[in-house]
Image 1 (cartoon, rainbow, N blue to C red):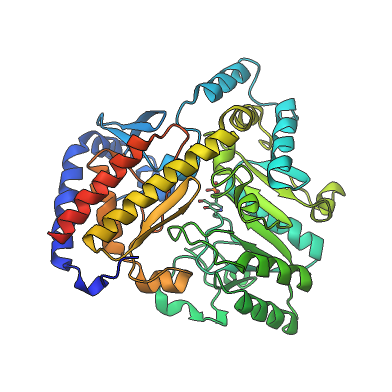
Image 2 (cartoon, rainbow, N blue to C red):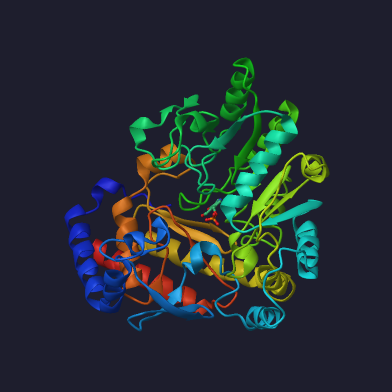
Amino acid sequence: MSTKTTAELDRERIAELTEREQRRLDERTDASRAHFERARTTLAGGVSSAYQEREPWPIYLSHGLGSRVWDVDGAEMIDFHNGFGSMVQGHAHPAIVEAIRARAELGTHFAAPTEDGIVVAEQLKTRFGLPRWRFVNSGSEATMDAIRIARAATRRDTIVKIFGSYHGHHDYVMVSIGVPYERIGDREGYASLPYGAGIPQSVADLTVPVPFNDAPAMERRIERLFEEGRPPACVIMEPAMMNLGVVLPEPGYLEAVRELTRRLGVLLIFDEVKTGLCVAAGGATERFAVTPDLVTIAKTLGGGLPSGAIGGSEEAFEVVESGAVYQVGTYNGNPLSMAAARASLEQVLTTAAYRHLDALEERLLAGCNGVLERFGLPGYAVGIGAKGCVTFSPEPIVDYESYKAHQDAELAELAWLYNMNRGVFMTPGREEEWTLSVAHTYEDCDAFVAVFEEMAADVSA
Ligand SMILES: Cc1ncc(COP(=O)(O)O)c(C=O)c1O
């Protein structure tokens, strides 16, 4: 890690560059502006999800192919955003296009099971080492249902999550995510804070946050919950934290969490909506060799179609098998999504594909770390499988507190603008990561590094 401290950076220079790059992006995205003017008269904020909003207007895309996307102004960009990590297959992969085409001609929805769903479940069972599966349509549905299963299985209401982790947009987990530093509360008893309006405090109070990478703190908090007469049903966590850039688990942490949850009779849910099928064939579960009671996946599963899944042990799924929990949904196991998922798992996300992703990742991380080193910028590149980021921080980020204290939001914003003005489509937001696809090449990674180098040189000039 580079040793230059944040204070040594020329803040005026960063502000100047940010203004220049912002102007340049505004000037080159006239068609996006026009789309926005039209969209805002019907779509709230001109978009379908708050995560697509952007000041002064969002960048609207027209199409994608392989590792590339095109915006409505005609700019071709290498896609490192990849639909928040959904498109590890690359855009319009021929095997997936063909599977969707063939399925569309046979009917796209029956609300009755099809063979493709069985094949996908068999694939997931092998990859994640968990015997029981159900399908849903998004990551949020997956985490919502997994928590309900855990609650039913344990007959408890309280749940434990990691402070700062995002697990989707339902009330159970829209708690203690992006909050001002001073509202976090004491590390031994973090506050349960609704994330945005419309979430009842009484629901948020059922969700108890603990710090990442600190198994003793988790154990102490769970023991206190037992003493308070509200033992938790589950711990829901990302095994490698995304949505704060990338925060890897420290050696022994996941093993300790597995041991303590088992010992205390609390179910462990790995939310692999971002990591699953993205960091290895069997996600972080395979990569770190720690098996949870329940796992949730989505994003990459559908090859660009809405889908998600919950996997689990036979014991955890007993409440679903018995009918005690209604795990339901009109579009669950939708034939089109299942056809795409089957093609993706059988033909695209193969062992060779994960080798390719690992090789690309290594190149990208090494390239970015080289730039940080050469220019003495505070930060480090970190990643796993197809996911990674440059974390601008003079200190290692290990949890939400260290993220809030040290991450340099100004540099993160500037890096995004440099990318967008130089043919690199990147996830907006200081907490986001890149996602590689099987269609990416070493040249694509080198192009990313070259843009980063240009920014580093300009900031240091
Ligand atoms: C870790 C994690 N879990 C759950 C979700 C929710 O997924 P979705 O947006 O498909 O509902 C997300 C979305 O970014 C996520 O990152």
